Every structure is written in C-alpha cells, then in structure tokens.
Amino acid sequence: MEKDRSINMMQEHPVIRCFNISKWYDNICALNNINLDINAGEFIFFTGPSGAGKSTLLKLLYLDERASQGEIVMNGMNIARIPRDRMPYVRRTLGVVFQDFKLIPTRTVYDNVALVLEAAGVKKNIIRQRVLKVLRITGIVRKINAFPPSLSGGEQQRVAFARAVVGEPSIIIADEPTGSLDYDSARVIFNLLLDYNRKGVTILVASHNLHLINETCKAVNGKNPTDGIIRERHLRIVNGVVTESG
Ligand code: ADP
Image (tube, rainbow, N blue to C red; front, side, top):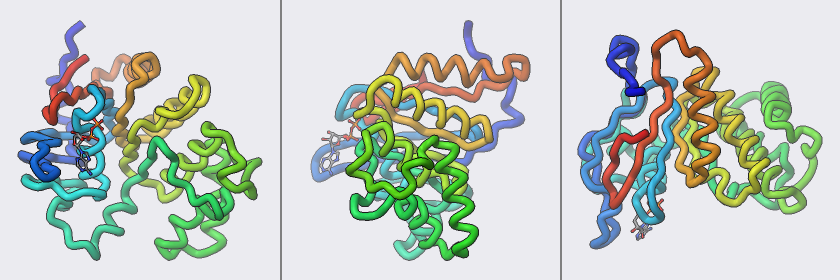
C-alpha cells in the first residue's frame, strides 16, 4: 500500500536538513547535489551499491568529512561550515557506530565507554552509573573488565553501541554496523537500534542486510499502526544521488 506521508506533515520536525550537498575527492564526485530532510524520530535506512556514497554522506553528518559544496543544518546549526573548535559539541549530540567497532584495544570495556563522558566533563559517580546502565542495556556488562581483543565481533559491537549511546544522543548514525557480524549478533544490534528509535532517537543506518532491514521496517511501522505516522524511510544512494524507495 502507498504510504501517505501527508498525514503527518504537521508533526514533521527536521533535525537534519541537507541543501545541495556535494562532495568531491579530487576528481571523484562521491555525492552529487543532495537535498534531504530527516525528521525527528525517523528510522532511516541507506542502501545502495558499494562506492555509491553512503559512507561519505554519513561522514559529513558526523563531521568526519567536510562538504565541498552546500549546507547541512543539524539541530538548527550549520555543521557544514562549523569551526573546528565547535565540532566536539556537535559530535556529543550524536552516537556513531562503525563496521569495525573502533574500540581502543588497550582499554577495558568500561573505559572505552566511560571515555565519552570523561571527555564531556561528567562527574565520576555519574559516569559509573551511566556506563553500567548502557552496558546492561547492550547485554555486555559481564565483560566490563575485559579488553576488546578478547571479545567476539558481536560483543565488541555491543560495547561500541554502548559507547555510542552513553552520551544520550538525539541521533544515532551507524555505518554498516553489522557488516562484520554473524546473523544473530547483527540482529542484536538492529534490535538495539529499534529500542532507541522507540525512545525517540533518530536513527540513520547504512546497511546491506536486506533481511534485517525488512524485519526492522516491519517492527518500526508495526509499533503503533493506528497513529498514521510513518517513521521508517528507505533511501537508496546510487552514484552519489539519493532517491526515496520502498
Ligand atoms: P559507499 O559507502 O556507498 O560504499 P563511499 O561513500 O565510501 O561509498 O564512496 C563513494 C565514492 O567516493 C567512491 O567512488 C569512493 O571510491 C570515493 N571515496 C570515498 N572516500 C574517499 C577518499 N577518502 N578518497 C578518495 N575517494 C574516496
């Protein structure tokens, strides 16, 4: 059935707006004039072939790369032009999950997660409470004193997820978060994304896992089928151009 987005026009509240975004790497055009609004509480899936521009778009949003052209307004701030010294403040409103986890191998699970709050100047006793809470939510608290290399991929991604959410972000960006996980571990990560979306967090996830995407779509749309609000969107990127699909 055709989704009727007009039903919730009044409730739409863009948290991310991309205006004519392009990104070149030397003479390679990775993103070509992207215009995109993402609303608060949406669950966005980015799909598309390898090299299409998914990671590049997500990198612009989590401030790992700068747009060559265009504006990105996130939570009312123009992040495409933000001075470097302001970047940490913007990053703290985001939780980012990577395919390769990016944990610090020489620090314990606890420290990997706590570092986010230490950098933000949070008091030690509050840090402990919040780290324990997210490690329980992600089901990895029993490994609190372990070092990442001793954990499985699925366990490392739970830790990375805990690190992404410990700062209570309003937006979670996940770039192929299950790309190196087995199906069961991947499902755990998608379910965590779904849980946070249900708490109102906006989710942007690039993934190739079509089966899990379909399952998650059903769960997102099925949570409150009578309210008429579509919260899941499927965006396909091909050759640096975004189209709405699904
Ligand atoms: P996807 O995530 O969809 O696989 P990417 O965003 O990684 O695609 O890449 C989009 C295009 O930009 C590709 O042609 C890729 O080779 C190129 N690209 C990405 N990052 C760089 C980089 N750091 N330097 C040069 N080219 C890059």
